[in-house]
Image (cartoon, rainbow, N blue to C red; front, side, top):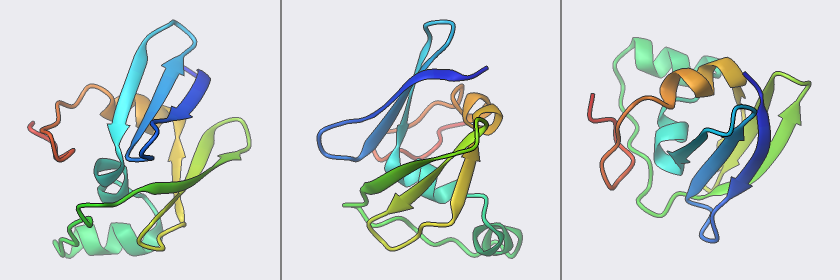
Length: 104
């Protein structure tokens, strides 16, 4: 599945994807930062080292990566996470609390 539109809310704290089938998925910046799949973030997750996202975390940049993903940059300086469409579709079904933390 591929997106037909990607947008940030006015505060840059939520990213929304409109999928080609018309479904809309919205992701909190904190969730995306927590789920970043770069080597450093994955190593921290393997070691069970939690690095809580700042309460005022924002998405500062969204860049396409080929036709399969986006790279996100965050206000905490992190800019190495690549988020493939398939990964974003997989996590779209998770439920989140007000802080963007998974409730599953």
